[in-house]
Image 1 (cartoon, rainbow, N blue to C red):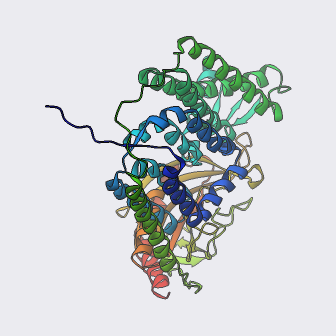
Image 2: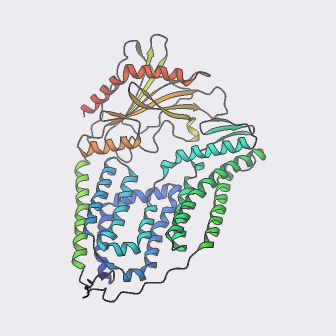
Image 3: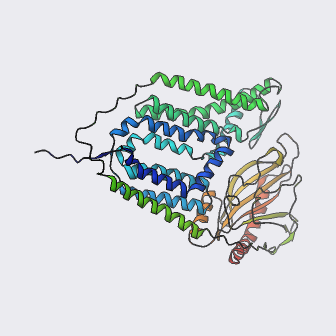
Amino acid sequence: MTTATLPVTPLVPWARLAPGLLLLAVLLLLFRDTAQAMVTIWVRSETFTHCFLVPPIVVWLIWRARGRLALAPVRPVPWLLVLWGGACLLWLLGELASVNAATQLALVSLIVLIVPAVYGAAVTRVLAFPLLFLFFAVPVGEFMVQPMMDWTADFTIAALQASGLPVYREGLQFVIPSGSWSVVEACSGVRYLIASFMVGTLFAYLNYNSLRRRLVFAAVSLAVPVLANWLRAYMIVMLGHLSGNEIATGVDHLVYGWVFFGIVIGVMFMIGARWSEPELPLPAPRAGAVAAPGAAGASLWRVALVAMLLVAGTQGLMWRLDQPLGKAPVLALPAAAPGWAGTAAYQASPEWRPNFKTANLQLAQGYRRLADGATVTAWVGYYRDQNYQRKLITSTNGLVDGSPEAGWSQAARGGTTAAGTALRTAVLRAADVSSVGAPRLRVWQLYWVAGRTTTSDVQAKLLLAVNRLLGRGDDAAVLLLYLPLAPGVPTEAADALLAEHVQAHLPAFRQALQAAQAGR
C-alpha cells in the first residue's frame, strides 16, 4: 500500500507572485515615511552609503535563484502572521518613541516576512540569504562608535608605549613628544566594520556551499576590520611622529586609512578564494509534485489580505495616538533647600552649553552651599510633543556636540549612585589635551520620563513608547548637575558635593517635573 503525495504549487507562473507583490506595494505605500527616512540616512551619512547597493544586490540574488524558485513548492504559512503582527508592534513602538532604528528594522522585517508567510518554507529556503542580506539596508551600527573609539585608543596607546614613546592620555585624547592626537568618530572603524561584514557575507555566500565555511568567513570579515583599524590608527600616529607631522595628517589621515583598509580586505578575499567551492547543480524536479495553477491561489490571497489589514490597522492606531498636545510646558526649578541658597548658574570659560538644543525648555539655576560657598549648577532640558526632529534621546544629543569648533571634549565617563538614584558621570575639558590649565567640569546626568528616572537610553525610549501607547503623553527631561574642577583637585571632592546636592534637591526636582507634566 502506498501513501499518496499531495500536490504542491510552484512559485511560477507570474500569477503566483501577485499576492506578495501587492502586499509589498501596500506595505511600502503605508510605511513610505519610514522608507524615505531610511534612504535619507543613506544619503546623509557616509557610514551607510553602502546601503544603496543592498536592494539591487538582493534583486540580482533573487534573479540568480530563479531556476530553484521554479521548482520550489508554494505552501502559505498563516501562523507566521503572528510574527507579522509582532513586527507591526515593533514599528508602532519605534514610531511612538521616534526611534529610526526600530521602525526601519520593523519595515525590513515585514518585507522579509512576506516570503515565508505567503509562499512558505520551500521558497524561503531558496531565498534565505537574499532575505537576510536585506537587513544590511537598515542603517544601524552607530551604537558601536563609542566602544570602538575606546578600543582604538586603548590599542594605539598600548602600541605606542610598546614602541618606546611616552604617552599622556586623557579620555580619547593623548599627547606624545611630537604632538597631540585625538580619536574621533572617523577613527572608530565602524565604517570599515559594516562594509567588510556586508561584502564578506556576500563573498561567502557566492563562493562556498558549506554553512561552516560561510560562517567562518563571515566571522573573519568581522574580526579583520577591527584589527586592521587598530593597526591603521597606530601606523598613522607613528608616520606623523617619524615625519615631524608632515605626512599622515589632515586629509592624508583618511586617505591612508582607506587605502590600508582596501589592501587588507583585498588580501582577505584572495585568501578566502583558495577554498572556493563549485556551485551546486539544480535538483531534479520530483514527479507528481506540481499541482494545478489555481490550487493554492486562494490561500495566498487570504494570507496577503490579512497581512494588509494588520498593516492598515497599525497605521490607523498610530494616527489616533499621534495627536500632539501643542501646549508649551511650564516649569519652575525648585528653590534651594535648607543650607543652600539660589544663585546664578556657573558660566565656564570658554562657555559650555549642553548639546540638547531642541528642548522645548532649557533652564539653569545655581545652588550655593552656605557652609563654604561651593556652587552646583542644575540644568534642565524639558521635552514635549517629541518627533524625529525634536526628541530627548538621539545620537546628536549629549554633553558635547563633538565638533572641533565646540571647544569642549569629554575626557571621562562613568556612573554613580546618590540618594538611591543611578546617575551618569563625566568629566568635560575645554580645548585640547595639550593645553595647560584648561577649564574642567564634573557633570552628573539622568533622564526623567513620566515620573521615573533612568540613565539608560534604551529604558528611556521604552518608557516614552509605553507612556504614549497608554495615552500618558511624552513629557521627558534631562537633568544635568555640574561644577568646575579646580586644578589638581580629585573628582571625589566634587562628587561628594554633588551627592549632597542630590540628597537635598532631587525630590524637589521630581516634584517640579511632575507639576510641569500635570499642567499639560
